[in-house]
Length: 204
Image (cartoon, rainbow, N blue to C red; front, side, top):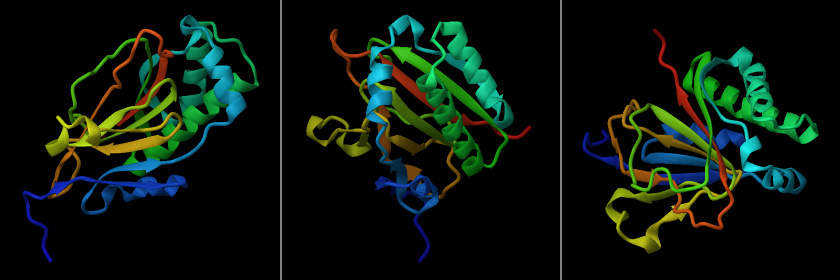
């Protein structure tokens, strides 16, 4: 049966393996979430890192240069070299490499950012093919079906450490995307977020 051109993808699929992210191309799927748990010791270490020492980076990076770029970002922020710091770099690079393979390119647009306040409070869809989000520290990204955006009880949140792959406006499919997302509303006492954002880099 042919899919109607005006159909909207709204489904969110979840799984405990990285392979669940491949479902982003399935009909009707607007987001795929890899439900994983960060090592408790690693999470405790990251929660104790001063805000000023959390690494930040905005760059287009080749997959073979991921570790070098991330290590440099950690050095710039003053994050002390340790087993946990190396684990952070390795995990960030692992996700970026997996994302680049899924999107079919050798480069990724990587944004590693911190936020102590609400940065993007409005529900929206990004003007990209797809976007990967992973909150390493603090509250995770919120999402909702577009027709329920004004109903607070319908809002859902990606858990810390989970990996969410979301369709964007430019996703190559005959259906539109009916799932919106936004940054969480943060209070004064909330832990500063450390968020990884990955976008594909189109060839040419």
